[in-house]
Image (cartoon, rainbow, N blue to C red; front, top):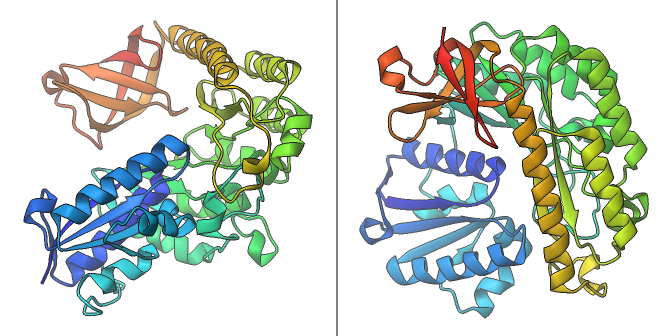
Amino acid sequence: MARYHIETYGCTSNRGESREIERRLRDAGHYRVDGPDDADVAILNTCTVVEKTERNMLRRAEELSAETADLFITGCMALAQGEEFAQADVDGQVLHWDEVPEAVTNGECPTTTPDAEPILDGVVGILPIARGCMSDCSYCITKKATGKIDSPSIEENVEKARALIHAGAKEIRITGQDTGVYGWDEGERKLHRLLEEICAIEGDFRVRVGMANPKGVHGIREELADVFAANDELYNFLHAPVQSGSDDVLGDMRRQHQVSEYLEVIETFDDVLEYWTLSTDFIVGFPTETDHDHEQSMALLRETRPEKINVTRFSKRPGTDAANMKGLGGQVKKDRSKEMSAAKRELVGEAYAEMVGETREDVLVVEQGTADSVKCRDAAYRQLIVQNASEYGLEPGDFVDLEVTAHETMYAFGTPV
């Protein structure tokens, strides 16, 4: 029986994998301790999305290897750039995430049984519906770790969702490298079918769909929007990362979609849904991005007015095609990032300001906030904060009607009514 310490960095897919690792370890009788000093083994689930993250992962791996007898390294950086840890003289084993539980005690950890504990984080259930993607982006290193899409059946994913709900999950987060291409490996795009069947599970819960690239969504945009409209269990929330407003840059990125397809997805959702949230990502400073290309991105941002926006400065990832391109100067990337981030704050702030004075029904309390507050999500996944939550008896998992009373840039405040 081993005492383990685990640290997870990166996206919800990584967190889901870590919880699966922990589930298997707990099934085998191992238990978690608060820090590496008290552990027999340490597990580091890594991210490698940008160069700064890579440096942080190497530094943390070095620290953990010095603090524990055995270190197991998994996640995207481990699988895509495992040699980096050896070159840094890190004393640890690089493994795929599903190899970690068995390696912890030299093969003694059994496989998960059907009645194993579901993956839960408070009242949030994380459900990775597939691994990998169908894209070949010139700047992406994650594909080296995940490969092409591998989709379990609808029935298998529905059963996992049902287990989470029966275990107390009130919010199911559908995750994956690209949820929009779920089923492509079997010759059929079927995200909309999966969502419909999950929503049919008995219980009071909400479902949030994770990142779906515009190309994958475009082919099923009408079916997907109809499923959102027909099922109150689904948050009216779509994360479709466009990355650039220039078709020339998108071509150099090998993003598969064009701006017109991204716009058609938005138009379809606008036609079908009265209230929904668009989330997107932009990469600024790609090596071939001109001033005109950047202005096209800024124009697209202002035209589509997403309520959640991730802005990332381009950084070269080793082994990718984009790493061989002549890059832009750091000041150029900094200036473009600053301009877009300022526009982002303005747009998101305006979206939350428009909510003030309105009432949101059946808002889900998702987690505890700071002090005596709770974080909630409305039907479009917009964040509402309730202060002095104990006075209202609010706890994660509750549903409540809220009057929106004030706002900050990235969230609003609500009072129960």
